[in-house]
Image (tube, rainbow, N blue to C red; front, side):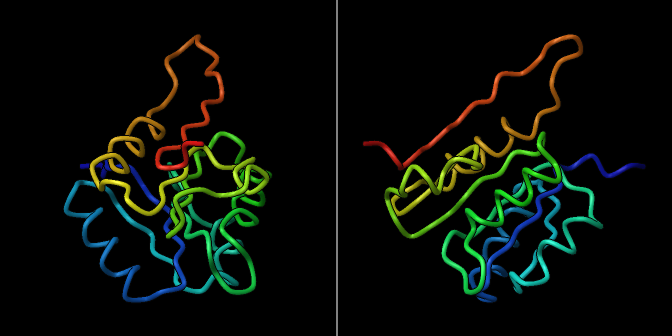
Length: 138
């Protein structure tokens, strides 16, 4: 039987945070590909098949927004979600993100949005790029 769970490419430099959110996502029905070293994320991204990217915003060496740009360059149709401890991020850091979830965001909102963004487009319909930014209202 094929594994039809949504495949999440999850990059977070904090191993403890990564383990916790990976467990939660898997309990909620996602298949998670966790990466804790941001320097290896891009090469691994080129070798891995996934439906959505979930990226920590604040990482050493490369920020989540920089990694989002690289992923969108390689895989323009793959949605990218940034997570951070900030309630708002600069607009320039959100250009290549389809959603941002920051401080005070409910887990249910993150899960729901990830499921919506990872849905394949309906045949014959060209999807409009949606830029969902929960917990980033101004």
